[in-house]
Length: 365
Ligand code: FNR
Ligand code: LAC
Image (cartoon, rainbow, N blue to C red; front, side):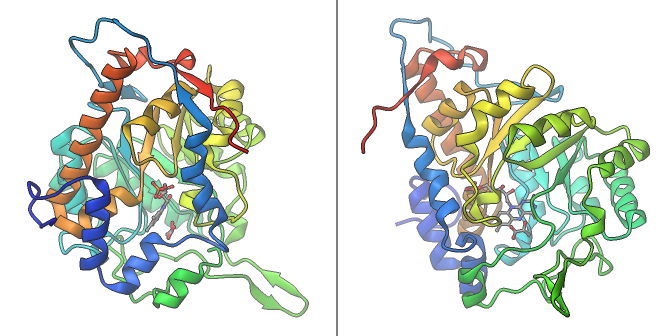
Protein backbone atom coordinates (compact mmCIF):
# COMPACT_ATOMS: atom_id res chain seq x y z
CA UNK A 1 0.00 0.00 0.00
CA UNK A 2 1.41 3.35 -1.00
CA UNK A 3 2.14 5.82 1.75
CA UNK A 4 3.36 9.40 1.91
CA UNK A 5 7.04 9.98 2.40
CA UNK A 6 8.69 8.57 -0.68
CA UNK A 7 10.12 5.18 0.09
CA UNK A 8 6.74 3.47 0.40
CA UNK A 9 5.62 4.23 -3.13
CA UNK A 10 5.44 1.62 -5.84
CA UNK A 11 5.16 2.58 -9.51
CA UNK A 12 3.48 5.55 -11.14
CA UNK A 13 0.10 3.80 -11.17
CA UNK A 14 0.33 3.38 -7.39
CA UNK A 15 1.13 7.04 -7.01
CA UNK A 16 -1.81 7.99 -9.21
CA UNK A 17 -4.12 5.84 -7.10
CA UNK A 18 -2.72 7.26 -3.85
CA UNK A 19 -3.12 10.78 -5.20
CA UNK A 20 -6.73 10.07 -6.13
CA UNK A 21 -7.47 8.93 -2.58
CA UNK A 22 -5.81 11.95 -0.98
CA UNK A 23 -6.72 14.87 -3.24
CA UNK A 24 -9.95 16.72 -2.73
CA UNK A 25 -12.45 15.53 -5.34
CA UNK A 26 -12.87 18.89 -7.09
CA UNK A 27 -9.11 19.35 -7.53
CA UNK A 28 -8.78 15.73 -8.66
CA UNK A 29 -11.44 16.12 -11.35
CA UNK A 30 -9.65 19.29 -12.48
CA UNK A 31 -6.31 17.49 -12.75
CA UNK A 32 -7.49 14.30 -14.40
CA UNK A 33 -10.12 15.61 -16.76
CA UNK A 34 -9.88 16.72 -20.37
CA UNK A 35 -11.98 18.72 -22.80
CA UNK A 36 -15.15 17.65 -24.60
CA UNK A 37 -15.46 13.88 -24.95
CA UNK A 38 -11.81 13.54 -23.92
CA UNK A 39 -10.87 12.03 -27.28
CA UNK A 40 -7.63 14.02 -27.42
CA UNK A 41 -6.84 12.99 -23.84
CA UNK A 42 -7.16 9.33 -24.82
CA UNK A 43 -5.27 9.93 -28.06
CA UNK A 44 -2.22 11.05 -26.11
CA UNK A 45 -1.70 7.60 -24.59
CA UNK A 46 -2.70 5.66 -27.70
CA UNK A 47 -0.27 7.54 -29.91
CA UNK A 48 2.68 5.78 -28.30
CA UNK A 49 1.31 2.37 -29.26
CA UNK A 50 1.72 3.21 -32.94
CA UNK A 51 5.48 2.89 -32.57
CA UNK A 52 7.84 0.09 -31.72
CA UNK A 53 11.48 0.17 -30.69
CA UNK A 54 14.37 -1.35 -32.63
CA UNK A 55 16.87 -2.38 -29.96
CA UNK A 56 20.53 -2.84 -30.83
CA UNK A 57 22.27 -5.70 -29.08
CA UNK A 58 25.73 -5.84 -27.55
CA UNK A 59 26.25 -2.07 -27.69
CA UNK A 60 28.51 -0.59 -25.03
CA UNK A 61 26.00 0.18 -22.31
CA UNK A 62 28.22 -0.12 -19.25
CA UNK A 63 27.61 3.55 -18.44
CA UNK A 64 24.21 5.05 -19.21
CA UNK A 65 24.17 8.84 -19.46
CA UNK A 66 20.71 10.42 -19.56
CA UNK A 67 21.98 14.00 -19.15
CA UNK A 68 21.37 16.65 -21.80
CA UNK A 69 20.93 20.39 -22.20
CA UNK A 70 17.86 22.48 -22.99
CA UNK A 71 18.55 25.85 -24.62
CA UNK A 72 22.03 25.62 -23.23
CA UNK A 73 21.02 24.73 -19.67
CA UNK A 74 22.48 21.46 -18.40
CA UNK A 75 19.89 19.07 -17.00
CA UNK A 76 20.14 15.54 -15.67
CA UNK A 77 17.35 14.10 -17.81
CA UNK A 78 15.61 14.69 -21.15
CA UNK A 79 12.30 15.22 -19.33
CA UNK A 80 11.04 18.24 -17.46
CA UNK A 81 8.21 19.36 -15.20
CA UNK A 82 5.54 20.82 -17.51
CA UNK A 83 3.82 23.97 -16.30
CA UNK A 84 0.59 23.21 -14.45
CA UNK A 85 -1.63 25.57 -12.49
CA UNK A 86 -2.49 25.64 -8.79
CA UNK A 87 -0.12 23.20 -7.10
CA UNK A 88 -1.38 24.52 -3.77
CA UNK A 89 -4.67 22.73 -4.38
CA UNK A 90 -2.82 19.42 -4.03
CA UNK A 91 -0.24 20.09 -1.32
CA UNK A 92 0.39 22.87 1.17
CA UNK A 93 3.92 23.60 -0.09
CA UNK A 94 2.50 24.00 -3.59
CA UNK A 95 5.00 24.99 -6.29
CA UNK A 96 7.75 25.38 -3.68
CA UNK A 97 7.61 21.63 -3.04
CA UNK A 98 7.62 20.87 -6.76
CA UNK A 99 10.50 23.27 -7.33
CA UNK A 100 12.59 21.75 -4.55
CA UNK A 101 12.09 18.22 -5.86
CA UNK A 102 12.96 19.20 -9.44
CA UNK A 103 15.99 21.26 -8.39
CA UNK A 104 17.31 18.48 -6.13
CA UNK A 105 17.09 16.12 -9.11
CA UNK A 106 18.65 18.63 -11.50
CA UNK A 107 15.60 18.51 -13.73
CA UNK A 108 14.15 21.57 -15.50
CA UNK A 109 10.83 22.80 -14.12
CA UNK A 110 8.41 25.20 -15.81
CA UNK A 111 6.03 27.17 -13.61
CA UNK A 112 2.63 28.47 -14.61
CA UNK A 113 1.45 32.06 -14.49
CA UNK A 114 -1.41 30.54 -12.49
CA UNK A 115 0.73 29.24 -9.63
CA UNK A 116 -0.46 29.31 -6.04
CA UNK A 117 2.98 30.46 -4.86
CA UNK A 118 4.62 33.55 -6.38
CA UNK A 119 7.49 33.31 -8.79
CA UNK A 120 9.62 35.13 -6.19
CA UNK A 121 8.85 32.43 -3.60
CA UNK A 122 9.73 29.75 -6.15
CA UNK A 123 12.98 31.51 -7.10
CA UNK A 124 13.97 31.95 -3.45
CA UNK A 125 13.28 28.28 -2.69
CA UNK A 126 15.56 27.02 -5.48
CA UNK A 127 18.10 29.72 -6.29
CA UNK A 128 20.10 27.31 -8.47
CA UNK A 129 17.37 25.10 -9.87
CA UNK A 130 16.80 25.31 -13.64
CA UNK A 131 13.39 26.94 -14.05
CA UNK A 132 11.43 28.61 -16.82
CA UNK A 133 8.32 30.77 -16.53
CA UNK A 134 5.15 29.97 -18.46
CA UNK A 135 3.15 32.99 -19.59
CA UNK A 136 -0.55 33.39 -19.97
CA UNK A 137 -0.87 36.71 -21.78
CA UNK A 138 -2.62 39.41 -19.86
CA UNK A 139 -5.13 41.52 -21.79
CA UNK A 140 -2.93 44.57 -21.18
CA UNK A 141 0.64 43.99 -22.39
CA UNK A 142 1.97 46.19 -19.58
CA UNK A 143 0.78 43.55 -17.10
CA UNK A 144 2.48 40.81 -19.15
CA UNK A 145 5.60 42.94 -19.13
CA UNK A 146 5.56 43.20 -15.33
CA UNK A 147 5.35 39.39 -15.11
CA UNK A 148 8.32 39.06 -17.48
CA UNK A 149 10.37 41.51 -15.43
CA UNK A 150 9.54 39.65 -12.23
CA UNK A 151 10.50 36.33 -13.83
CA UNK A 152 13.85 37.78 -14.94
CA UNK A 153 14.52 39.18 -11.49
CA UNK A 154 13.61 35.85 -9.87
CA UNK A 155 16.13 33.97 -12.01
CA UNK A 156 13.87 32.20 -14.49
CA UNK A 157 15.89 31.26 -17.56
CA UNK A 158 13.32 31.31 -20.36
CA UNK A 159 9.74 32.32 -21.12
CA UNK A 160 7.26 29.71 -22.27
CA UNK A 161 4.38 31.38 -24.08
CA UNK A 162 1.31 29.14 -24.08
CA UNK A 163 -0.78 29.78 -27.19
CA UNK A 164 -3.49 27.12 -27.01
CA UNK A 165 -5.61 28.69 -24.29
CA UNK A 166 -7.10 32.00 -25.45
CA UNK A 167 -10.29 30.71 -23.81
CA UNK A 168 -10.92 27.70 -21.59
CA UNK A 169 -12.40 24.65 -23.29
CA UNK A 170 -15.55 22.88 -22.20
CA UNK A 171 -14.40 20.52 -19.51
CA UNK A 172 -17.25 18.42 -18.19
CA UNK A 173 -15.31 16.47 -15.59
CA UNK A 174 -13.87 19.65 -14.14
CA UNK A 175 -17.29 21.34 -14.12
CA UNK A 176 -18.99 18.34 -12.49
CA UNK A 177 -16.30 18.26 -9.83
CA UNK A 178 -17.02 21.89 -9.03
CA UNK A 179 -13.60 23.38 -9.81
CA UNK A 180 -14.02 26.78 -11.44
CA UNK A 181 -11.73 29.54 -12.62
CA UNK A 182 -13.66 32.04 -10.55
CA UNK A 183 -10.92 33.67 -8.53
CA UNK A 184 -11.45 31.54 -5.39
CA UNK A 185 -8.12 29.75 -5.87
CA UNK A 186 -5.24 31.78 -4.40
CA UNK A 187 -3.17 33.51 -7.05
CA UNK A 188 0.48 33.44 -6.08
CA UNK A 189 1.43 36.02 -8.68
CA UNK A 190 -1.02 38.58 -7.42
CA UNK A 191 -4.73 39.29 -7.19
CA UNK A 192 -4.59 41.53 -10.27
CA UNK A 193 -3.86 38.66 -12.61
CA UNK A 194 -6.55 38.23 -15.23
CA UNK A 195 -7.61 34.61 -15.51
CA UNK A 196 -8.21 33.04 -18.91
CA UNK A 197 -11.83 33.61 -19.97
CA UNK A 198 -14.13 30.76 -18.95
CA UNK A 199 -15.94 30.90 -22.27
CA UNK A 200 -17.16 33.14 -25.07
CA UNK A 201 -19.33 36.05 -23.93
CA UNK A 202 -22.60 36.58 -25.77
CA UNK A 203 -22.91 39.86 -27.63
CA UNK A 204 -26.16 39.77 -29.57
CA UNK A 205 -25.67 37.13 -32.22
CA UNK A 206 -21.91 37.27 -31.78
CA UNK A 207 -19.59 35.87 -29.14
CA UNK A 208 -16.66 37.78 -27.76
CA UNK A 209 -13.48 36.26 -26.40
CA UNK A 210 -12.30 38.68 -23.70
CA UNK A 211 -8.60 39.47 -23.93
CA UNK A 212 -8.15 37.64 -27.22
CA UNK A 213 -6.72 40.80 -28.81
CA UNK A 214 -3.47 39.94 -27.00
CA UNK A 215 -3.14 36.64 -28.87
CA UNK A 216 -1.45 37.57 -32.16
CA UNK A 217 1.91 36.62 -33.62
CA UNK A 218 3.07 40.17 -32.93
CA UNK A 219 3.36 39.33 -29.25
CA UNK A 220 6.53 37.39 -29.97
CA UNK A 221 8.17 40.59 -31.24
CA UNK A 222 6.77 42.47 -28.26
CA UNK A 223 8.23 39.91 -25.86
CA UNK A 224 11.59 39.94 -27.55
CA UNK A 225 11.66 43.73 -27.38
CA UNK A 226 11.38 43.70 -23.58
CA UNK A 227 13.54 40.72 -22.61
CA UNK A 228 16.68 38.86 -23.57
CA UNK A 229 15.31 35.62 -22.21
CA UNK A 230 14.73 33.00 -24.88
CA UNK A 231 11.10 32.50 -25.81
CA UNK A 232 9.52 29.06 -26.20
CA UNK A 233 6.09 28.66 -27.81
CA UNK A 234 3.92 25.97 -26.18
CA UNK A 235 0.86 24.41 -27.74
CA UNK A 236 1.91 23.93 -31.38
CA UNK A 237 0.16 21.23 -33.43
CA UNK A 238 1.03 22.05 -37.05
CA UNK A 239 4.18 22.49 -39.06
CA UNK A 240 2.84 25.88 -40.23
CA UNK A 241 2.63 27.25 -36.70
CA UNK A 242 5.97 25.74 -35.75
CA UNK A 243 7.57 27.54 -38.70
CA UNK A 244 5.77 30.79 -37.85
CA UNK A 245 6.93 30.56 -34.21
CA UNK A 246 10.55 30.11 -35.21
CA UNK A 247 10.31 32.80 -37.91
CA UNK A 248 9.05 35.10 -35.14
CA UNK A 249 12.10 34.33 -33.01
CA UNK A 250 11.07 31.38 -30.83
CA UNK A 251 14.08 29.30 -29.79
CA UNK A 252 11.97 26.22 -29.09
CA UNK A 253 8.44 24.94 -29.55
CA UNK A 254 6.43 22.54 -27.41
CA UNK A 255 4.30 20.19 -29.48
CA UNK A 256 1.30 19.69 -27.22
CA UNK A 257 -2.48 19.45 -27.08
CA UNK A 258 -2.40 20.73 -23.50
CA UNK A 259 -2.91 17.28 -22.05
CA UNK A 260 -6.19 16.90 -23.97
CA UNK A 261 -7.63 19.80 -21.98
CA UNK A 262 -8.21 22.35 -24.75
CA UNK A 263 -9.37 21.58 -28.32
CA UNK A 264 -10.94 18.14 -28.17
CA UNK A 265 -10.31 16.51 -31.53
CA UNK A 266 -6.80 17.91 -31.72
CA UNK A 267 -4.24 15.23 -32.50
CA UNK A 268 -1.84 13.86 -29.96
CA UNK A 269 1.34 15.89 -30.01
CA UNK A 270 3.24 12.70 -30.79
CA UNK A 271 1.28 12.30 -34.05
CA UNK A 272 2.48 15.65 -35.38
CA UNK A 273 5.94 15.59 -33.82
CA UNK A 274 7.64 14.18 -36.96
CA UNK A 275 6.27 16.92 -39.24
CA UNK A 276 7.22 19.65 -36.78
CA UNK A 277 10.73 18.24 -36.39
CA UNK A 278 11.07 18.06 -40.18
CA UNK A 279 9.95 21.69 -40.47
CA UNK A 280 11.94 23.42 -37.72
CA UNK A 281 14.19 20.82 -36.11
CA UNK A 282 17.34 22.26 -37.65
CA UNK A 283 16.59 25.79 -36.36
CA UNK A 284 14.96 25.26 -32.96
CA UNK A 285 14.60 22.76 -30.15
CA UNK A 286 11.38 20.76 -30.22
CA UNK A 287 9.77 19.40 -27.05
CA UNK A 288 6.76 17.14 -26.70
CA UNK A 289 4.22 16.68 -23.94
CA UNK A 290 1.03 14.69 -23.43
CA UNK A 291 0.65 11.18 -22.07
CA UNK A 292 4.30 10.58 -21.23
CA UNK A 293 4.23 7.97 -18.46
CA UNK A 294 7.05 5.52 -19.16
CA UNK A 295 10.68 5.32 -20.15
CA UNK A 296 9.47 3.78 -23.38
CA UNK A 297 7.44 6.90 -24.17
CA UNK A 298 10.52 9.06 -23.71
CA UNK A 299 12.53 6.86 -26.10
CA UNK A 300 9.82 7.09 -28.76
CA UNK A 301 9.50 10.88 -28.50
CA UNK A 302 13.27 11.41 -28.56
CA UNK A 303 13.63 8.92 -31.38
CA UNK A 304 11.12 10.98 -33.38
CA UNK A 305 13.20 14.09 -32.81
CA UNK A 306 12.04 15.68 -29.56
CA UNK A 307 14.87 17.08 -27.47
CA UNK A 308 12.91 16.57 -24.25
CA UNK A 309 9.45 15.64 -23.02
CA UNK A 310 7.22 17.32 -20.45
CA UNK A 311 5.41 15.67 -17.56
CA UNK A 312 2.11 17.23 -16.54
CA UNK A 313 -0.21 15.05 -14.48
CA UNK A 314 2.43 12.60 -13.18
CA UNK A 315 4.12 15.43 -11.28
CA UNK A 316 0.76 16.42 -9.80
CA UNK A 317 0.15 12.80 -8.75
CA UNK A 318 3.44 12.84 -6.89
CA UNK A 319 2.60 16.16 -5.29
CA UNK A 320 -0.85 15.06 -4.19
CA UNK A 321 0.36 11.69 -2.91
CA UNK A 322 3.40 12.86 -0.99
CA UNK A 323 4.27 16.53 -1.49
CA UNK A 324 7.89 17.25 -2.36
CA UNK A 325 8.92 13.64 -1.62
CA UNK A 326 6.19 12.40 -3.94
CA UNK A 327 7.46 14.58 -6.79
CA UNK A 328 11.00 13.34 -6.14
CA UNK A 329 9.69 9.81 -6.34
CA UNK A 330 8.03 10.40 -9.74
CA UNK A 331 11.23 11.90 -11.12
CA UNK A 332 13.35 9.04 -9.78
CA UNK A 333 10.95 6.39 -11.09
CA UNK A 334 11.08 7.82 -14.58
CA UNK A 335 14.79 8.40 -14.50
CA UNK A 336 15.39 4.78 -13.48
CA UNK A 337 12.98 3.50 -16.13
CA UNK A 338 14.67 5.63 -18.75
CA UNK A 339 18.11 4.31 -17.81
CA UNK A 340 16.75 0.76 -17.99
CA UNK A 341 15.21 1.15 -21.45
CA UNK A 342 18.27 2.98 -22.72
CA UNK A 343 20.32 -0.05 -21.69
CA UNK A 344 17.83 -2.50 -23.17
CA UNK A 345 17.73 -0.65 -26.47
CA UNK A 346 21.50 -0.29 -26.70
CA UNK A 347 21.48 3.51 -26.42
CA UNK A 348 23.92 4.62 -23.74
CA UNK A 349 23.60 8.35 -24.40
CA UNK A 350 20.73 10.67 -25.23
CA UNK A 351 22.26 11.59 -28.59
CA UNK A 352 22.24 7.90 -29.55
CA UNK A 353 18.43 7.90 -29.29
CA UNK A 354 17.73 8.66 -32.93
CA UNK A 355 15.26 7.90 -35.69
CA UNK A 356 16.75 4.43 -36.21
CA UNK A 357 15.39 3.44 -32.78
CA UNK A 358 11.71 3.76 -33.75
CA UNK A 359 9.61 2.03 -36.35
CA UNK A 360 5.91 2.12 -37.11
CA UNK A 361 4.06 -0.64 -35.24
CA UNK A 362 2.34 -3.25 -37.39
CA UNK A 363 -1.27 -2.16 -37.83
CA UNK A 364 -3.61 -3.72 -35.28
CA UNK A 365 -6.78 -2.87 -37.23
C1 FNR B 1 -2.00 21.91 -17.30
N1 FNR B 1 -1.29 22.45 -18.40
C2 FNR B 1 -0.93 23.77 -18.36
N2 FNR B 1 -0.18 24.31 -19.37
C3 FNR B 1 0.23 25.59 -19.32
O1 FNR B 1 0.91 26.05 -20.23
N3 FNR B 1 -0.12 26.39 -18.25
C4 FNR B 1 -0.87 25.94 -17.22
O2 FNR B 1 -1.17 26.66 -16.28
C5 FNR B 1 -1.33 24.59 -17.28
N4 FNR B 1 -2.12 24.10 -16.29
C6 FNR B 1 -2.42 22.76 -16.26
C7 FNR B 1 -3.11 22.24 -15.16
C8 FNR B 1 -3.35 20.87 -15.08
C9 FNR B 1 -4.08 20.33 -13.88
C10 FNR B 1 -2.90 20.01 -16.12
C11 FNR B 1 -3.12 18.52 -16.04
C12 FNR B 1 -2.25 20.53 -17.21
C13 FNR B 1 -0.84 21.57 -19.51
C14 FNR B 1 0.52 20.95 -19.23
O3 FNR B 1 1.55 21.91 -19.30
C15 FNR B 1 0.88 19.85 -20.25
O4 FNR B 1 0.73 20.35 -21.56
C16 FNR B 1 0.03 18.58 -20.10
O5 FNR B 1 -0.33 18.35 -18.76
C17 FNR B 1 0.80 17.37 -20.62
O6 FNR B 1 0.03 16.22 -20.58
P1 FNR B 1 0.09 15.12 -19.40
O7 FNR B 1 1.53 14.88 -19.04
O8 FNR B 1 -0.70 15.69 -18.26
O9 FNR B 1 -0.55 13.95 -20.02
C1 LAC C 1 -5.45 24.23 -17.43
C2 LAC C 1 -4.90 25.60 -17.61
C3 LAC C 1 -4.93 26.50 -16.50
O1 LAC C 1 -5.17 23.40 -18.28
O2 LAC C 1 -3.73 25.59 -18.31
O3 LAC C 1 -6.25 24.01 -16.49
